[in-house]
Length: 77
Image 1 (tube, rainbow, N blue to C red):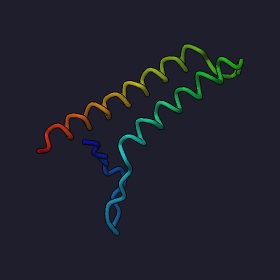
Image 2: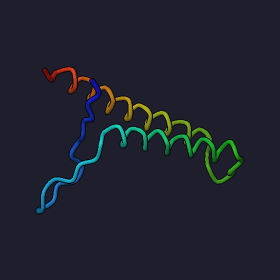
Image 3: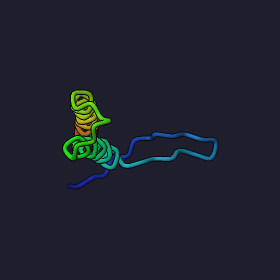
Image 4: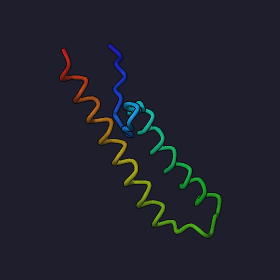
């Protein structure tokens, strides 16, 4: 069964605004991928080691979001 899990990211006086967790993890991976492509294309204003470190950290965060969603989904009846 495919269930979409949403995480509240912004709460305001009018209610809760929610974004699908899968969209957030996809965005984090896309940002890291874009940085890597910029380095590969020779952007000399980007430090390759810094980009690699940040990309890894974004992927780790995306993985944690995915794992939390999987755990949340498997806790449901």
